[in-house]
Length: 273
Ligand SMILES: Nc1ncnc2c1ncn2[C@@H]1O[C@H](COP(=O)(O)OP(=O)(O)OP(=O)(O)O)[C@@H](O)[C@H]1O
Ligand SMILES: [Mg+2]
Image (cartoon, rainbow, N blue to C red):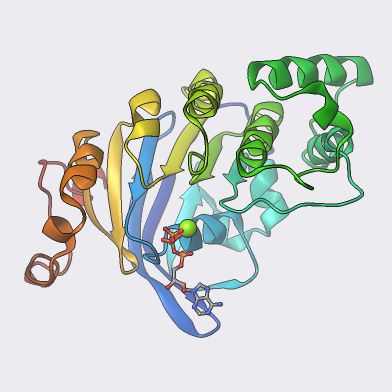
């Protein structure tokens, strides 16, 4: 069993990751590095494999790794079951959070902390939960509500960030946490993430929109297309995608010309290796 969370971010290094779901190959050799403490964004057309990458890294059993490697702080993630990856400090904010009728938010948070060996005295737990809920503008009544049960889309996303804030992971993968949030909620959620991002927590933010990136200020933006990272660049890449769409990047000639990777902005994915 690897060390439990040290409270410091660590490098995520993914090399040549090939993943199948139900015998269908979805990821076809993903190369991606998120250095400790950095914030990276992952963009890409619908169906390009972003959520598949997130689920694979978090250890969902449905995804079969057929080739490649993924390490976090030098630990071989792929050799670990999902719960061990969580204990190592990996956290995934789901694109579609699941309701657990019968389990209240407060009990869910306690169980999650206990499972990761981060239990704390009841009084401290309640104080921290109240603090984090206030920071995320989540009404107190949510403590006693069943987690995600009947929550609105935006409330579910906030509940995900609440888990992140309580668990203090070393790497957070946010899968479209910004989708469906109103402008105020987006700011609240983004502030919740930026408050924790830094030396203690790296972020991989999957998004379709540059808006959240104005708050998160990513060090790099990557574009996933058809199961591969085909382009990496600075934050301006997100604005360029919003302005021009994906076609200038993933047009058939551009993708075929050099095996699928190039840079419009001078920072290639290879450059991070
Ligand atoms: N069980 C499955 N059987 C067949 N194909 C699947 C299965 N699960 C996922 N896929 C396919 O894998 C591809 C990648 O899906 P994924 O959810 O990773 O995309 P995404 O980049 O997150 O898209 P979005 O932006 O819409 O969230 C899609 O074409 C999807 O239909
Ligand atoms: Mg997705």
